[in-house]
Image 1 (spheres, rainbow, N blue to C red):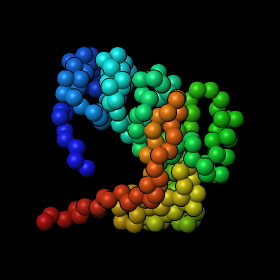
Image 2 (image 1 turned 30 degrees about the horizontal axis):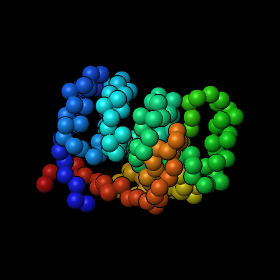
Image 3 (image 1 turned 45 degrees about the horizontal axis):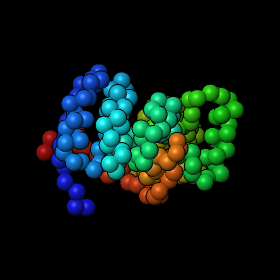
Image 4 (image 1 turned 120 degrees about the horizontal axis):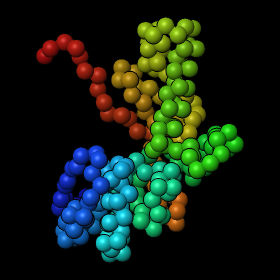
Length: 206
């Protein structure tokens, strides 16, 4: 799309000092930061980037794993305008997803929410896929369940329907791009069902 990579850095997972990196970002004139830092380094990185004025100068942050729970971890002003891409957001106007969210909130009140980035939707989908495979196989015997799981489908779920791609052990499901706006995620694009684009590798040598 005409962009240019002006820098790329990686760190040990326990890194918490990002002063030098933020200085590099600001000096480079970068307009977008694609973040893959996870806690404990995430909050000090975003704090330093915000205080350096990255957002004020129009800079945008992309962090594909950000979900609604991160508003409990990071001040909303530090991630205003951030873009994320996941299989579910609470804003989705889907009756099944809204009902599931209500049941979850009733059963588990508190700040920990049903989201995608925390693995909630993935675990839900996995358990329901396994259930469908067991029902088809008529047994919990591993190999029989794996054979049935190879083509398992869910007609509904958080984010919409999903299905296994035969021969891949991966799932085709809907994906969405959302933006953090005033302390919540707003969906800006529905990407529809996305193929995993994986391939099964043969155990036989070439």
